[in-house]
Image (cartoon, rainbow, N blue to C red; front, side, top):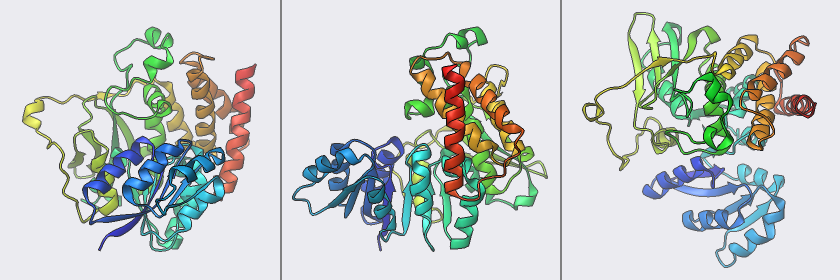
Length: 386
């Protein structure tokens, strides 16, 4: 019997890859609701393609356009926060949470319903409110399946042993577009150069996080909450070919790793069905054809955002929430050519230092996380305007 599915972020890169998986397996999934951001026509096309019952647009201004675009289809629609919440309230066995940024935090938390599977691609849910989010998921019996290739690979590798036997869980980074650049060259980088990811096709903000290696730092924080591993048992290794995605070093010296060609449909399919693997019509990994794979230590001198994220993870409490908020403001300023590349970590460090003396506890609820997020963003904006 087909499993019912709601897709939050259906018009983004993860959402589009999810649609490819769903359309390739029409007897496995029945899409109930789809949620998009601002593009009413794109969302209407998606809703018609998968035969959804309901389509919700985040931008209220596009509600009328969405309704017209769906005219005659029988698909209900809405726009704005209430429509998004309606989409997650509708009965569905699986929710794919791929709305990016803190905008996805509320809908993702609302999607936590008893007995559901949550295929999680919204990292802010764990970075900004990880303790509260995971506690609520456990209370409701929600199964969290990570969609990011690194965490999905770790989830599979960790099944080979017990958590207490893990010596180190390692996620990989391609190194981004500046892996071989000097610090002086990186300092002069333009937003277009920073957004040119060498392997993955993602949004501009995530691409720039990959260029600063902040993305890997945020993924360490995610891994801490997903797998109940402290900072000392989490690490990053640079692997430009993006074949290894996650590795587990066990206390007996053995290593278990998740390998795949860099295609988001692989972890998405696993997250949607997990132990019941779907047959995917994708190229197979041919290690002999590749011939050689390389690994390097991450250079935190050239990429200080990684060190800042590690420090926030070790500090705990509210610091990861503050780190993420400051980073989003700084990256937006860089994308707008208001600041240089290294002003991103400088801004994040200043904001984190400002809050450090207050010893704020981890947000107890998503609402608390959003309040703290706004305060940290305002602080970052003041620094940048000065």
